[in-house]
Image (cartoon, chains in turn yellow, green):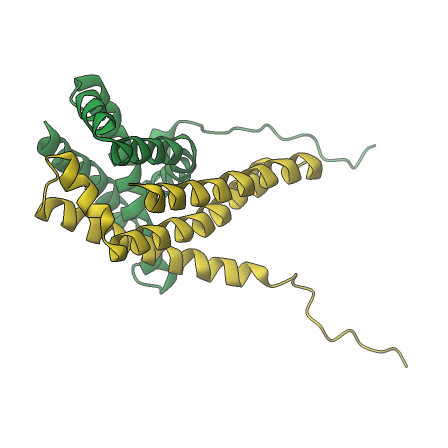
Length: 119
Length: 128
């Protein structure tokens, strides 16, 4: 008797998780955007001290960092979609995707050093 | 006698103005996302670093952002972000099947295009 292949050949399933996380990170970034715009309109920064005060609170730093991390994942999914649509050779795709990942990690590290490195 | 099909002529309509509104929103969402990833985000991070880093940096960038040409570039950035923002919110609704029918989807696509321009105009009014 031939054993039937019972699994559906539909791939690794990571796509569903990525799809959902892209939406969740979008909501996080949208909330931050609305909050930050409201904050800037409430106290329009007119001096260096005002500007620094906005990012000196630990809540603002944390929110900005969460925004950057959400962006990291969101942009990873979006950029990978673009790469998968337009770049077909596997080697080229791998190189470009690795570059994108490195750039995104660099953004997050840079952002953290800006937020916590300021005097 | 050959059964191989004759090659069909290909015609790609690359004029964005011929796209229906949802298609226009979609391609602009992609293009704006790419531009925000690079080069806009590193430029904004650099500006944040410089303006937060020292009082001299803040004063320098305040002067830079007061130039009309820089303001125009900033408004282009605002439009890219605003379009990506509003189009993204439309997609979130489409995901839960709100406005998924053809006519509502067209209407909301036009609304997204208008909101992007309106947001940019509002910011332009604020910074000018």
